[in-house]
Structures are given as structure tokens and as C-alpha cells.
Length: 72
Image (cartoon, rainbow, N blue to C red):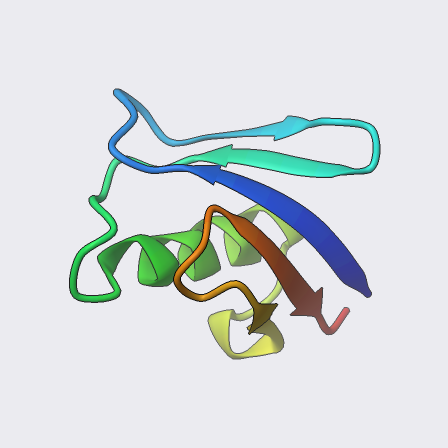
């Protein structure tokens, strides 16, 4: 399953919101040294109940708008 994600780094708490056509994910980590992407993978895995290896960021590794693939 592919999903569009809008990321908000350096938020006060980690949170996932449904935004109609995709998800809006608030991350506590900064977008430096790939920290935000690693936290995004962890949060998506927990949200969908899959292992972290089942979550891949397909597009937007250096952008706030991302496309992720989740293997259910």
C-alpha cells in the first residue's frame, strides 16, 4: 500500500493524523542526519502494526512531502 505523507519535524510530540488523501505525521526529531526519516519509519510501523522493515520511503527523503510503501 502506498500512502502520501506530510511530515512536521521538531514537533512537541509524535502524532499521526488522517488528512483525507494521506497522513500528517508530527515528529519530535529534527531533519538532520536522517533522524526524522528513521523516526517516521518507526511511527508508521507502529501505526500500521507491521515491522520496521515493511515500511519504505519511496519519494521525498529530503522533503516534507513523502510517499511511503507499507507491506501489510
